[in-house]
Length: 122
Image (cartoon, rainbow, N blue to C red; front, side, top):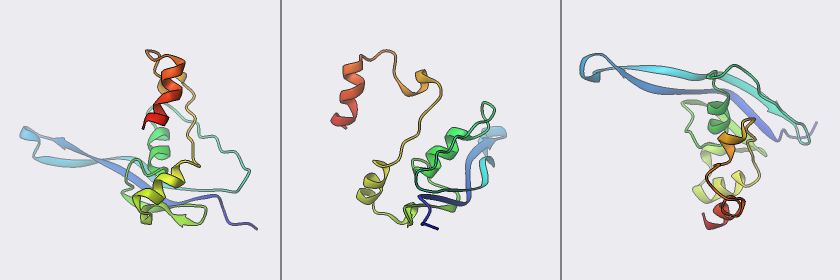
């Protein structure tokens, strides 16, 4: 069997939430809890769930746009957390999240030309 294209092992992402008078008490909001998945080359993966259940957070954490609280993400056999910034940027060029809601993906205030040009400018 070929090496998985994407392998997610016990991925956790939580965010600190301040509560109490003057925000002195810090609790953790667990957005992704021990996610595991394996995606082979040429496979398609769809993630569905209720609004607010952590789908986007999982995708952003897999792409390392959010730093994982714990767990590991391997893309083409390489641990993404261990990559240097330029190596991670190169790996991200071969990854893509596709959002169901076009208004979450495309800014309706921009022209098509501006949308296409923006990644080139960055």
